[in-house]
Image 1: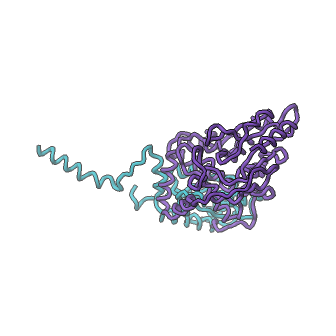
Image 2 (image 1 turned 90 degrees about the vertical axis):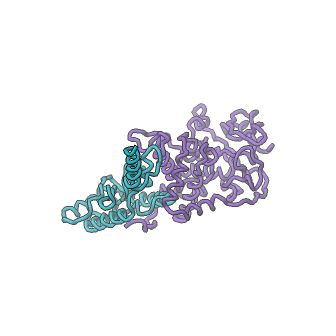
Image 3 (image 1 turned 180 degrees about the vertical axis):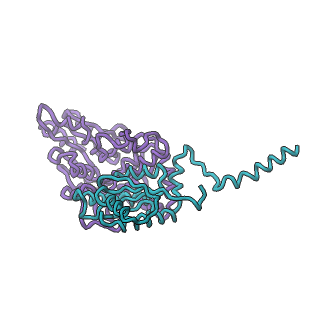
Amino acid sequence: MDKQNWEPKIVAFVCNWCTYTGADLAGTSRLKYPANCKLIRVMCSGSIDPVFILKAFERGADGVLVSGCHPNDCHYNAGNFHARRRWDFFHKLLDFIGIEKGRLQFSWISASEGKKFADVITKVTEDIKAMGQFTSYKKMNSEFTVDFPADLAELEEPVLQESFDKETVK
Amino acid sequence: MNELIKHAKELLEKGEVAAVIGYRQVSEKRTKPVIITEPEETRALVFNEYCLNNLAVYLTKARIKLLGRKNNKSFKLAITAKPCDVHSIVALIQENQIDRDKIHIISFNCHGVVKDFGFDFNGDNLSSKCITCETHKPLYYDKLLGEVKETPQARDSALERIKEIERMPHNERFEFFRSEFDKCIKCYACRAVCPLCYCQRCITDKTIPCWIETSSHQRGNFAWNVIRAFHLSGRCTGCGECDRVCPADIPLSLINRKMTIEANNLFSFVSGRSLETPTLVGSFNEKDNDELFM
């Protein structure tokens, strides 16, 4: 896919009680937002294990969004408080390991904030688009890490043509 | 050392403890962990600069816990611990893995240990955890032994390396850690030796669904090392055992050290220092930092 038409793949882990309902409201309010986010509904932002996020990156996500209820609004009272501490750490860890801060974003969206949902999705999509493909992680999916030339066709065609010319001359 | 042997023998003879977990000299510059249940065997016990193992790891093992239960009675377990190992024991007590009343801590005034077996004890061969160590006297103990001695001076090369990595751009950092984790052979020695990796079933052993790929392919290696570091962030007491046992020389304690610094910056918390405070990731505060969230 060429760079012009490239669209980022974003995985959003959203909580059932607030953000998912907020997404519903955005839909019923006919709000417009980019279609790059794949929503995965979980019961609470506290139930999102960091391995989910690593798995998303492994399977080719360019960015991940984690969203839940506002503090003090959690359906399970303290789920998002526990999550907040955990994400603070995970975020710092990923930053140290070399994953830019924008690749993994967080938000609090309540059930009544349909507009905010559309805005956050738009912002995240724009951020990831500006950052480009997450090639460094995707490269790990191949058995051998070989750096292919940026544009293979451009490099190889003249070489092939040359050798073909030589052979036909002979 | 006679004091240690005398004390351990006394404990076993009086029946106060069921076993003593300690160190035994195997050659001039090498010791081994040993679990002693008979009073006569205590003569093998030693404590010196070559006592590297963090013995707190044994306290979480089911077979060791069983030693403390004989004839439907529960006995104490005695453990010889360096002041830094006491941090691990404190962390285990905080996380309700062991009972303070069931542990008899024999600790020492410590002036540092070597980085690995076979080295001479001096500033160049000092273990990296000892360079920044502030607890030469243990925070909690039942018996304190040993004399106060001066710790050799050394350069904190680990902190310099962390700062060096932080100066790199993100793609270079990623490439550095990818190549480091690529060396991993998935022997799980880092997990086996860590006192705080006490899960009965580790997430990497759960393969349906398979969250962390178990083959030593670089993708699974990356996931394993990131998740290992994450599970220890805010909990690691910095004993540095993972670094020492890693056969591939992956700088594991570098990441742990970084996360310990972050825990201190974010929450002014250092794991394993106080029995009164709750664990960091097991508790929360409504006034926690909210900058991360949109």
